[in-house]
Image (cartoon, rainbow, N blue to C red; front, side, top):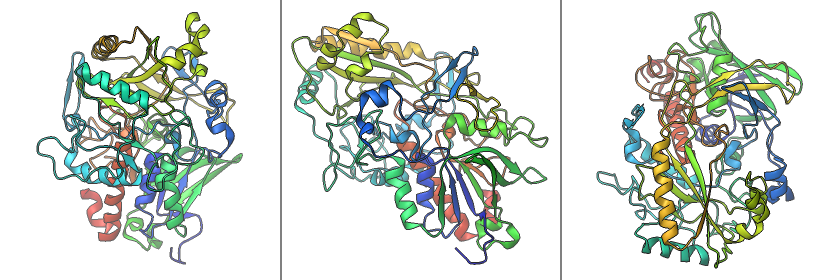
Length: 539
């Protein structure tokens, strides 16, 4: 960083230190740009409670007390996480690439999903890098739908690490599924295990923060290395809740970010182009949203002005719309005569019916999970069931619907926990396809000897896998962002979280969020190296 920089001004301001924001910061760590990361939460502490089911599941230790409203005006807890690393601190590590077909236009019985403005080939090298950084374990070619091994695919390196081994009971299950005609493959998963890694496998993982930092989450894979290697130029400010974005008189560039920090209103300003010492700063600097699909869209809508009456960068009217979070079902296959002694189940996945959805093992269901069941018999026999169940997560694509949307609600200051911050309107769609997936797999499980198959649909108002509210596309009439995830209307506004997804696909979004953020980071580095003023308007 040059001595001439005025105090308190920045080349790049990243809003949110989740997976996308962390990956972008890592990508820019050696650029010489002065970068500020504003994170609403704080670090998740390393403590005994990290792996305590009662503390994490029952008490919701790491969930903020924030309430939202649904489309009917009823309050609910969204199970959102505000912390360094974002929701990736609690993800189960599943690290899928989108299938090649997911980038094309998708047709459903009740509607369509637009094509992505980029191809799989354009994202492939960034998938490679994201897998390396996140320490993904897997077996290339074992998944029959893997885009890296399908026809016309460019040569793709193997996964950075070999697949995790099945524990004995999962190995038994894998053989039963093969005998039933399916093609189970090793679940690609982002953990640090083997070759000096320290993942214990038997400790709680899916839905829990990792006490020993062996998970390939945004903090471990990207942010800590970025802060270490870019210590001179990158600043992380925690407990900083962004309130609105300020633009110039013409409404074409963001000039400042207003945020609330420790009870006071603060302003972070982009550097004055007249004093800039880099091409990117000379073009007005950059603000990159990475607060998650719901909160990033809410921030744009809260930043409405006479120049942008529908919300900042929202001339298309699409900001906040097309919220997606997958159609999901948990199946617990209970074998009355066989215990499941597995500590770490997440080594198996199935894509035989990918047009219907994806099937993967989830983190082991615990008695604490079943204690919240509305079914009295399940609650009564929760320990017996948990010891015998093999637990699956089934997810199908939900299509973008403009009526599925987020809208900001006014909150004064820090706001009391009971005061809603966002209205989330979501009506499930494409459920016929999802029910087909569930029925098919239930039949297979029964053929494998599982007499009881318990089924639960997660609360649809929770926002796991949230995507789609600020989608990118080539047409500014139907998309908020261009192919480089830059606003069609505000020249220095970028978005690097799941908001940009035009469709949800039927696999976990984490790896794609990271890969796309790395792609955008390379684009910004190129602008900074080759001269922002010329290529800025051509990007």
